Amino acid sequence: MSKIEFPQNFLWGSATASYQAEGAYKEDGKGLSIWDVYTHIEGNSKNNSNGDVASDHYHKYKEDIKHMKECGQNSYRFSISWPRILPEGRGKINPKGIEFYKNMINECLKNDIKPFVTIYHWDLPQSLQDIGGWENKETAYAFRDFSKILYEELGDKVELWVTFNEPRFFIYSGYLIGNYPPSYNDPQKTIQASYNVMLANAFAIEEFRKSNAKGKIGLVHSFSPVYAISDSKEDRIALRNADNYFNNWVLDTAVKGKFPQDLIDKLNRNYDLSFMNKEDLEIIKNNTVDFIGLNYYARALVKAYTIGETVLKVNNSGKAKQGSSKIVVKDWFEMVADPKSKFTDWDTEIYPRGLYDGIMMVKERYDNIPIYITENGIGMVEEMVSGEIDDSPRIEFLKLHLIEIYNALSSGADVRGYYVWSTFDLYSWVNGYEKRYGLMYVDYENNNKRIPKKSYHWYKDVINSNGSILED
Ligand code: BG6
Image 1 (cartoon, rainbow, N blue to C red):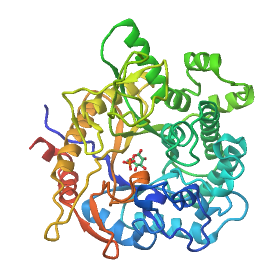
Image 2: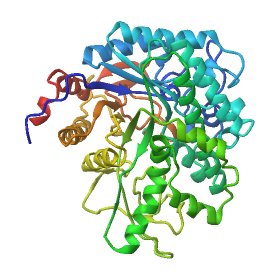
Image 3: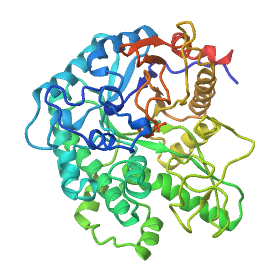
Image 4: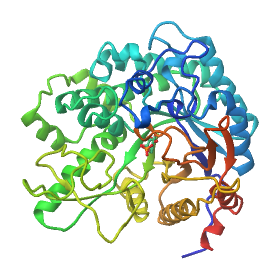
């Protein structure tokens, strides 16, 4: 390995999302999101926990940004709560909501931290869910109008925008698996919602190009590079099916402006696609992204689907998990787990090499498009011992992944930044607060006090050395 040295203008950051971090769920005029409603229903979340307070970022953002600065981070990826800006999803703007994000952005800029704004990280206004959510094209129009407000209000100060965080993840969880709101288990609805989200992505990009906002716009994908267990014809077909299922409908559509034709043909055999129309497809074709954000947690290892054989079932995350999860793509492929691999406490395979392979795949397929690694991290159960948190496994995890990114850079990929998930511990959706990802510990029992973990100090050294300590 040559001496590790990341490009001078590389962005070193960390990431959060509004519902998971902010709290203040009905403060200063904020409306309710689907997550506010969902987690308030008994039995929907781990220990009936919710994001009412979360990490209290709404009140502690200045302190949090100060910590980022002290760590040497030069970018912060966060999302905007739609119902904080538009309590009803459309119509009347909440000035306090705009003010909060302006303050956040100004605080970042004051500290030489480049804000990286995610427009949608899953907290849909409940009022829009009430009219059918992402199944209804009206929501795509509402998203377009929401994005326009953001460009007008924040567009002079933000250079990096993404429309959506992980369309695949929130749609499959909400519409196919049913463990996220709106809790459906329905392929037809899944297809409709997927289409409307990719259309909404194109609408928001169209508005961006029309606006005076500076900077670039992209989309963040929940990236599961797919591998097959063999090169047999059956396994190769399974690989293509899985790649379409996990990746291509998002990446091809966002970057090339076109849904994969073989996927459409396959879906057409069993589902009603009559809602797809020429005008929409034209908008999708003409409004593609400037860059791609990749969230990387694990690869997907697959084999041909064999009815009746109980091995491992598909779950949403591209994480092969023993037992519990459901078969969601009958006849297409099956997930398998490599017995030689290491897994996290949540049965997610640890496979750093997948990040290199995945980046190179994106580079080849999409003409060396600029890439940001917008999330990467490991969820752990952690305890404070004598006031300190030794999260050495996280350091090892991040180190191995950063080395793979460096290798991809050395192989010519245009990777421009890296964001650890997450800046501080936060609400892990249906996993509640037990699964911690942060560089900073949040003491939920003690006024949400922030305590930098060992990984925070290590990340600071990585940034200061421009990556060279990764060689040690
Ligand atoms: C990504 C999401 O899918 O993974 C984050 O963008 C999420 O919002 C992260 O928290 C980790 O997943 P989880 O379910 O372990 O919190």
